[in-house]
Amino acid sequence: MVDPVSLPVKRVSAARILVSSGLGLLFDAFDVGILSYVLVVLAKQWHLTHTVTGLVGSVSSLGMAVGSALAGLCADRFGRRSLFLVTILIYSLATGLSAFAAGIGIFFVLRFFVGLGLGGELPVATTYVLESSPDEVRARRVVFLESFWAVGSLAAALVSYFVIPSSGWRVVFLIGAIPALYTLVLRFALPEAERYARLKRRSTFGESVRNIWSRKLGRRSLVASVVWFVMNYSYYGMFLWLPSVLYDKGYSLVHSLGYSLIMTLAQIPGYMTAAWLVERWGRKRTLVAAMILTALSALAFGFAWNTASLIVFGLLLSFFMLAAFAGTYAFTVEQFPTMFRATGMGWAAGFGRFGSAIAPFATGWLLGAHLGYEWVFGVFFAVLFVGFVIVTALGKETKGAALD
Image (cartoon, rainbow, N blue to C red; front, side, top):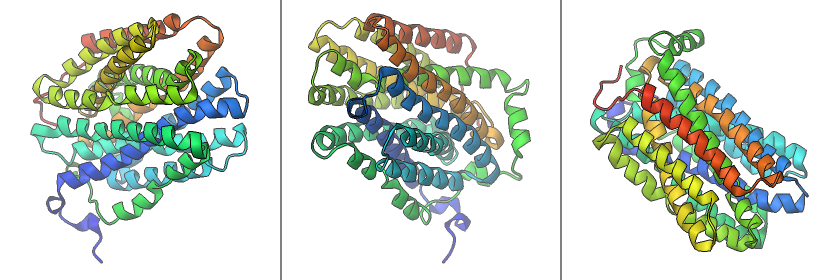
């Protein structure tokens, strides 16, 4: 049998690479999504405080930080395709094993390994799709790739809504182990990225790190790292806690999951809007516009006064947040040349994971201190506004520019 890596890239459609990589992100989002719903149940079953519950999300994010940085380096050295398969396998097996956790200690360990694989897969898949796409639609295809995240989040909400109340939280983790089988299919379906395959030589680990922080690329790396920190802090701080926030406001578990499901529906049109704007309007403009609108939506959500306002502002928050995240991927992945692209993307995303590690814990602490949701979401507004200012002032637009 001929190894698919040796097949000419032109014989494998870019659509297959996009869909295959997108399904990997769908499973990623499913795992992140089910955790937010499972935590509502575990907090009651294992008698967890807000602080401990927040630490579960923080441990996952620490694993993602390590995974992003390491996978980016390895993808520049050994190839995008190989690392894509390895990272999917790691997080899917760890997710399946989470179903058998008997206590919070082993659950912490398994969530770190889930994060390790998940964090590595995201930047590698994004780099893989960009380097396999024609220039005129490369950013749009990156956003289409990230739109699979919204589908995965929706799947997590649906499965959690119907499965957790009837069958328990362990079953949803078993469902999350399905991607382990998916890697067997991908092994015989995907080639290496076209741009990467054309490189005359591959960078060493040290060379990759030195170059992304060189005088030429250092400012781009800094801006990208700040963007990823802001976006991860905001997304994981808000959406990991969303079912719990609704539950704390007096809604039942079933109603909390149902309202969260409704809000999740707005993510898909958010992605589709960003996919149109990044090619027509630009990567930077799309990102900064979505960031400031997300900040305003977060502030409004914190001041919501009844069920209708919660749903309306929650829908706006989901729409703009996911549009901003789509812009983050399209903006970041084009900041670096092909030889160091996965490293630049991975290290920026890895630094951003510290934001997702801090946010669940910080949000849990604020909720535990009874400061009020106005203060909690006011913090998210402030963080997003700082990111908006930095990208507006220092970010580089890459629309229409040729990739190195």
